[in-house]
Image 1: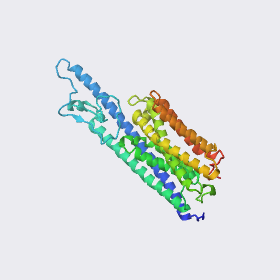
Image 2: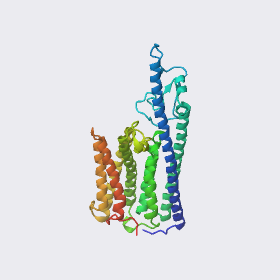
Image 3: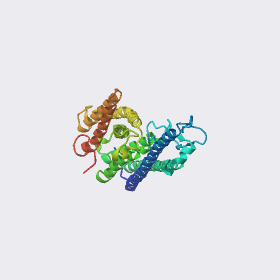
Image 4: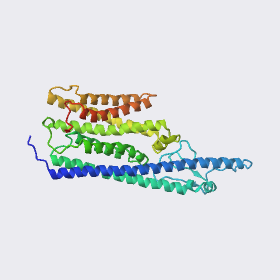
Length: 381
């Protein structure tokens, strides 16, 4: 194979794009945290509004018990209904009579509305909700801008080296995080799921910052042992599986947090932090759907690696540390899906999924950096 010269200009542009991408993701994280806080405040107002309306209705019924048909709460003319703009903020109080089945705030008659404190009146809460929605849209726009720059960085890196750009640990992490961000952006594109962005962006920004500062490798040709068409197939499929697994694992982690603090029953500091999250059932469903794709794709990546190993080393499996931990990760994903389908094991299943995610991260960093093996292509000194 003819070894091409490295295009240093494209390499520098690639590095600039990487730093720009991390900066955009960091800005998106900051904006998403503002959005997250605004959702929490809006939910608290909705919960307080529901409580106050229930109290006023109870007082009104008690004071007018002598008059037949004088109770307050019947729907009719002069109703002030609190509507959300789309499906932007989840129900804040499960089972509350002032919240409709679609998640929109319910109604009270005009007289009851007028007795509410100004901060709990419909116009104020609607304004809060719409303001939060705008910040959520800003977050989504920044995320897509970051993804575009992220993709550009990968293209520039590949063009500079005249090869597919996942030949060392730095490049592999770049690919996994790119796939993870693209998949997440599509999966949680609904307004009601945008509150998940801080939980996704924190690990992504942390991993990319660490990769760019501690794991960075200069652009260089592939080492001879990686010069195979199986290199592209194996690593790209594993990267896609790992990116989807990132979404599934974080969703299960959020599910466990939400399960410990049920919607509408949040307590303490942790409850305040978790309160904007969707209901546990939605998070669990997201984790499950993502893992349904993770299992076959990640497994296919392992199979392609075994085929490549047979072509390169004359055997399909050698119990190398990286391939062994990859197999353990795949088995954990299979165990999660099995446990998830077993009645009464949903919470235990989530713990298995989180363990699988932790094992994947362990394989990505500890095995690649600390343990020497046949997969020691991190590109580190």
